[in-house]
Amino acid sequence: MNSTKQSRTRNAVDPTQLCQFSFSDGRQCRMFRHQFHASFCLVHAREEQQLLAEEEIGQELVSISGQFRTTTDINHVLGKLFNLVANGRIPARRAENLTYLAQLLLYSQKHIRYETNLANEDMGAWEETVRAAYPSPQSEEEQETESEEETVDVN
Image (cartoon, rainbow, N blue to C red):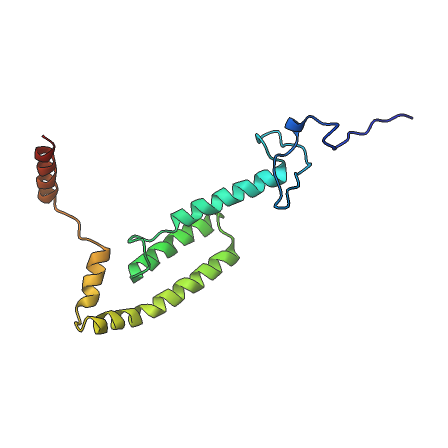
């Protein structure tokens, strides 16, 4: 009985039907391109999607001030982390590691406060640091005054 086997060599298949993923040593993936992806097989399409999701999650876990100076920053990020875990976007193991790091950051806050006050020889230096991290919201009158000044400067 003559049965023809579908070959997966580059000579037997149209190259546009193969995955376009290149390994670090220069080899090319020989799997067939997935029907719902423009250039990758199912395995490499999933890997690409995971990398993109990790970058997006990293951007979502940004604190209010952009740093981890205050407990408010850390608690803000922990709240975001809670939502990501609840939605299944971060594995529980990774969340455990991140919460442990947050615990260390929270523990070190009192020492940072002490060092800041000591370095500036002023017990109010920490409050100034917090104010710099979180500028107070402007009143409506101040915002209107600034927008009027910008309008005058443009003309």
